[in-house]
Image 1 (cartoon, rainbow, N blue to C red):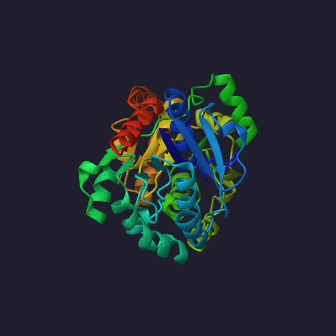
Image 2 (image 1 turned 180 degrees about the vertical axis):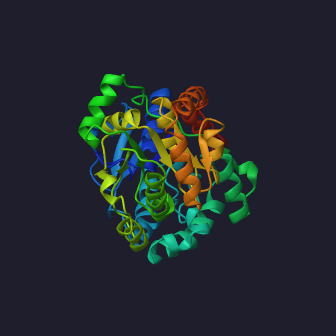
Image 3 (image 1 turned 90 degrees about the vertical axis):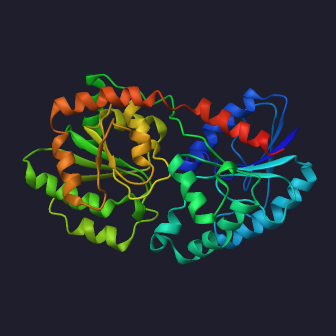
Length: 372
């Protein structure tokens, strides 16, 4: 059997949400099925670290697909030709994109449909592409994989897809995430926050991550309680917008906010495990891996009470209305209570056991097999 896989997001040193999901599930899948030939389709020369086993063959296609017009060229011209040449039995795409022009059975993974609900958060050209193609991808696919029951229902509601066609593969968490000793935590705080305790946010600095309200909430938290707690922001400013900048500029405590940019998995682990709490108050998520990362590090979590986040967090986090800055600030204030943190850490440790990359890879594999 020959399975072609869209692996254009496997980029060394640049793995983000969907790229990490692809990395964790694919490396388990290919080693579990040595009888299958996997053709990994890249849009540039791949790093050898992504050729996980001897049954993986890299295929590099032109052009580098990082713009909607190049997406069309890549998936509607280059990919169909490659699938014919490979004589693929199946095409799997972990990042939502399919080829409408290929007759090969295809399985797509949709992580969320945030653009359907918050279109103004997207650059217009990307929004045009998503709105035009993703409904067609949903109906073209032999099967759809998604990452939460919330996202499954959202796909059904938005695109009128038969729910029996959709499989839910909950994300897992990298095994590197684990607690640090108090001494190690102190070293991390010394390195990143001048020795002070800190709340942390991690993610792409995108409007739906709700940074503008987080800045307002942190300002209010600082005014509600005299403390030396900092706010550590982990992520690149690739989607930084004027409203986010205005909210930051208006802060009285902007000097208490520390931007560290993108971190390696190792450094992200250290920061997560040393945080007073993770504050992950997006207003739309298909899953929310940082919630699990914090649970695995024995770090308490504040997260949103909307979309998929309650499904992931269960009762192991403080759930807040992401549109209410006062509610976010009050949750931060609660996190100063050690008893609250200890209780949430115990619940988070238990909750994390319900998720694993092994299970996610098995669900995806079974979905692939249903499509052939």
